[in-house]
Image (cartoon, each protein chain N blue to C red):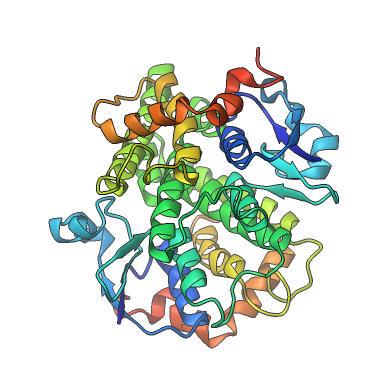
Length: 212
Length: 212
């Protein structure tokens, strides 16, 4: 059985948990507590030298890293269970661009590592929280526009795609840092549609074996 | 003919130029000078509300954004011209993880927008350059490990993949910010192999119509 190296509060782990749950794929959770540095222990660094979660360990021992690459792998290896990217190449590119706005332009600029570096550089807590909130508001503004002409209730139509798997975890961070969300009605509606689904409930931080 | 909205010094535009050149696809460059704010003009914001380059305008007027998503589109739409991702799903995931280390963990944390925010937050120039160099060194350390067991001379074997298209532009930034590169012999060798190829020369910043 596949093993997902995960931390319940890790947004990037949450994305992969959603993709696995939407596809109905069984896996075992191997929890690494980022707060106590378990991801920097030699045993995990042998599996993933970057020391990041998530990492997906396949049955043959192959270890996949980076949430985007893992989700694309799941789509390549289990394409019809259901598909999380549309078939049309241009629409696939739009879904991927939505994911990239979150995975490239937003989350890495407000993750715990960067916020720690900002504190070390002298920013106070208000400055750090403001940095994170502004980053998320900018990213969400781009996301809202990318789906403005798309039917709902999900980001791209009547079934979840990878866009939803990336959006929902980012909302957790948005609320943690007090981002203003009124300008994003389409994103909020997609989040509500997602949170009503069993797959998203199963993948949620509070449903994980390592949740506290 | 496809139009690539680009800026000669934009690392993300450079990635897409490399992918287009490796696939031998014809396109017209539409240059936007990021230094004078041309990417924030209403005409371009109508095409790409995020105001970022690159954006790829297809023959039917569809506009694709985000360099990762554009490169994946080129692979979907022109798969055999040549392929820039391997066929094996687990190896595809490794190549994508390499791209993601650069496109998610590295470049967005040291791009001009973030460095400007750091200056506005009070960091001096030495602090800003140190932030960028450290970010790139961390990313390159992960990249070096991801290809340690792969044959050369390119990142993944005897032909360039998307990994090389993402690596080469990141080297430009690495040198600009004085990142220490001695620890990355495998990456340096891949870069040298790439720079000897006509496609990489054609895609280079200094070869662009808007280069100054």
